[in-house]
Image (cartoon, rainbow, N blue to C red; front, top):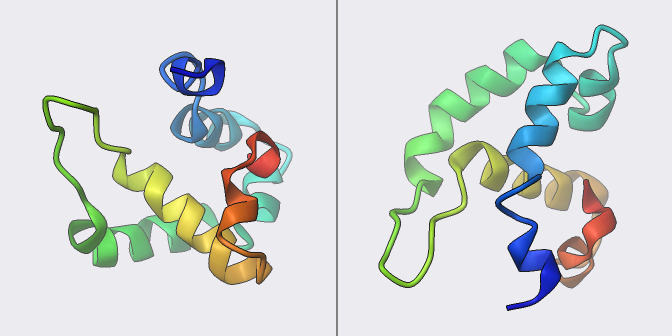
Length: 89
């Protein structure tokens, strides 16, 4: 297991989003390119469609994190492979 995969438990996109929510500077709106209320509204609409279940082999990526990656992919126009690097978040 790579160190990047091991660090997923310690600090991941879900934790970063929670940190940005608590930050009063408006960084969350800049990161998501939408207000948090809009993000929650859309997440509630599509969350059940992108949710995965845990297996014995791995823990599923949380819905909020999956949705952030999808938004980043669609908004940036980057290749999906470029999203796999640690500087995404």
